[in-house]
Image (cartoon, rainbow, N blue to C red; front, side, top):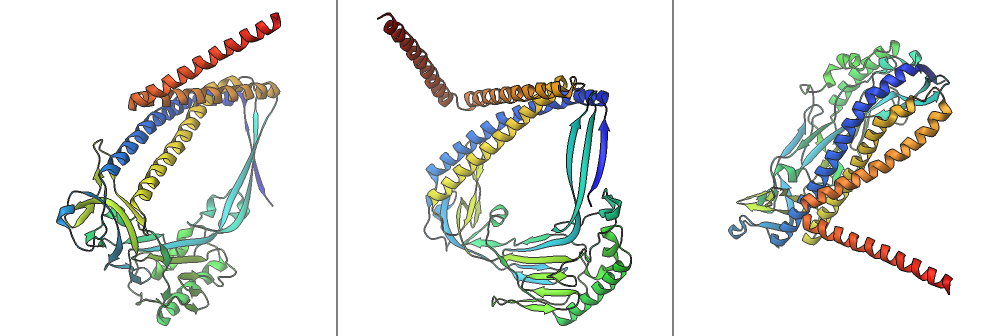
Length: 441
């Protein structure tokens, strides 16, 4: 059954909160305005940088050997990424030669959800009813059930193992004959399962420790997620003393190793009784890796290294895309990405401006809360006005930014708009005269 919590806020408190909201509203309005201005400048500068880079970039067919004549040039090439770095997760003894090794942890927990309904009452007070309900689900972090609102669900959560997500990345990765910088290494994609094969001794030891912890917590559920972790020190973060060597399976076949409380299936290490019937406290650890492969790069050659291109306006460019991608396609993608980011930030800026205006004028609505029906009518009008004013203000800021950052383009657009308005006005007058003449005739 759902648990409900009811809170009543008096009229005076609501008006007081609205007064505080005016200050917050001005901050949101200023923040949204600043974001809109900065975003237009950022968009223009990135566009200029990409256009400049396109004029100087050259395609190189073969980068298998260093070419001194390419030093200092911005190049595009497709080659095979390679590394000899061995990546190791010492907590579990998992290792491989790869560009990236990642450990993702999921916990099966009770999770608190809530739904809130508000109702204005005659006299200006407000009643808020919050309904809390609880579901068992997989989640990325342990949940502290001690903070749950419903006492019946408090202290129900625990974990058989408390450990964080972890990612390991190779430091030495080559692209043909050239070494990739860290930011480009991080751009390499193509995740594949890191299949596991653990020693019988290691699995048996884990199974014994987990069973002991499970039995102790099933008798009396712990009141926080750290309590069980203290009892399972042999599998806690950083404890690699008892970890045996783990071999990976490169054949692509799924390796299953089952014990009562520890199960290995391909690249998943599961702690719990039954992976097909998860219980609160169960933990699933998934291992993936990124292997060497073909990639396309736009970067500047510097000796035996690749580095970012620095445009005249100071903006930097270095791009890596997995697979064979042409130079034109990569630049087109960068332009598209710039445009998408620009529009996303514009909408965020507009949202902040409108929210700020609502915060400023919200007191007009709250002052009328003594008569809820009247406050609702005024609220609709204030909301509409704030949206219209917010849109107009945002467009003015964007237009002013374009005049500042691209005066020639903005001037041409402004002239076109003026001419169009003049044409429409003149056409309207001509149509009006024509109608008058038709009536007289």
